[in-house]
Length: 215
Length: 215
DNA sequence: AAATCCATACGCAGTTCTGCGTATTTTGAT
DNA sequence: ATCAAAATACGCAGAACTGCGTATGGATTT
Image 1 (cartoon, protein in one colour):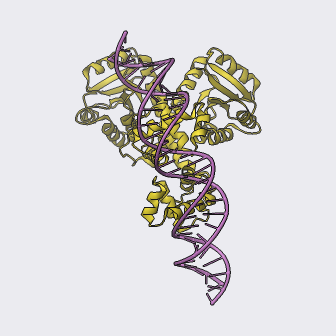
Image 2: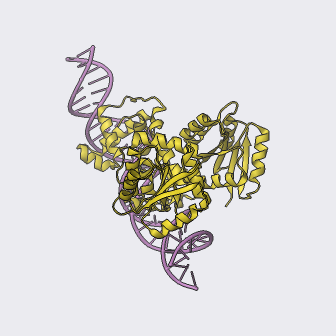
Image 3: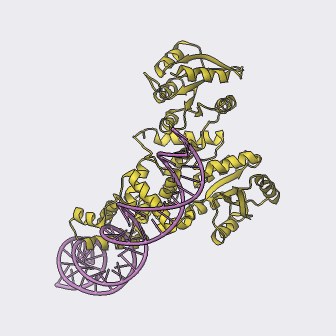
C-alpha cells in the first residue's frame, strides 16, 4: 500500500537531497512539496489526501511549528514528522507540543527516514534520546507531587511568608529588610521552619514546601 | 573511561544471556548483580559507586518499579534502564514515572543495548516509538498552553547534572561524592553555572533552571 | 598546528548560613 | 487577667557557600 507524503522545505538543495533518499523506497510516494507552511496548507486543502508530512521548521511566511498546529487542527489524521538539525531543540519541542509525531534529522540516511515514517504510521513516535528525555521529565512533573500526601507541618502565617522569601532566593539580610524585622529574627523564624519541616538548609526547605504545596 | 553497571534480574538464564552480550564492550564493567530490588539496594549502599542499573521489572521481594523509585530518591545520579518484554507496557510506564531513563528489550542485541546505555549516560533517554508516543500524548494534555520563552543558557550536560544535584538540596561535598569528582571541581562547575544563568546562589540557580525547564 | 571548549583540580578571602542558647514583647484565647 | 503561642531580638562558633585567580589534560574545531 503506497504511503502518500508531502514535504515542506524552503531550501531546494535540502529538498532534493531528501527526495533522492526517499526514492529508495517505492512505496513512499511524494505527492507534492511546498516552500513554506502557508503554501503547504493550501496544497493540502486543494489536492488529494496525504498520510504524512515531512516538515522543516525554519521557513518564510509560515514556520513549521505554526503549520503543524494548523494541520493537526484541521486534518488530525495527517501525521507530521519534523525535519530538523541537532541544534534546534527548542522549536522541535514546540512542534511536538503542537502535535508532531516525532522527527528525523536532516542528515539521516534513507533507512532511518524510512524507519521513522513506519514507526509513525504504525502508531508510534519517532524521537531522539534527547527529546525523549525532555518529555520524560515533563511527564513526571505533575505526578511527582501527587504521589505523597500533603501536610502543613504546623507552620504559622509568618513562617510561610518567610518561606516565600526564601523561595525567591533572597539572603537573610534582604528578607529582614523586606519584612522590616531584624536579621536575627529572620534567622530564628527560619530555624523554626527547618525544625518543623525537618530539614537543614534552604534548598531542602523550599523543595519540601513546594512538594506539599505550602508556597 | 569504564562504565560501572549493576544488574537486577531474578532469572539466572536471562542474566547470563545479558552478561554475555555486554562482554562485547569492554568499557561496560558489570560491578555486581542482584536477584531482586532489595538485594540491589543493599549492594548499592555497601559497594562501590555505579553509573547505571539494568533493571528487570518482575522480581520477588522488591519489584523493579519500587527499586527504581528508591534508587532515584537516594542516588539521583545513578541512571536506570529497564529490562523489559514487549507485553509489559504498564509496568514499564510506571517505571518511567518512577525515574527510569528508558528501557531495553530483553531480546535486544549487544549493539542496541550499548546504544541505549550510551544514550542514557550522555544525557538522553532510550525509548521505543510506542512508549514515546504514550509520553507525547500525556505531555500534550496538561501543558499545551505553556509556551513561554525558554532558553538553555549554553549549559553543558555535566553542568545540568550538577544542577540536578543542587536542586536536590545536596551540599558540595555530597555532590562531589556522588559524581566522584573533587569538591573543587564541583565548585568550579557551579561557578560556571551561576555565570551562565546570571545568578549568585543556589536558590536562584534552581529557580531559573526550573523556569526554563532545564532540569 | 593552533585555538577553543570542557572537565578536572587547588587556594585564599570574604560572605552567608546554620545550630544552639537566651530573652523580651505582642497577640490571642480561656 | 493569665497563660500559651507567636514574633521579635542578640551572640558565638562552626559549616557551607561564593568570587576570583590559576592551572592541566583531553576533545573538538579550524
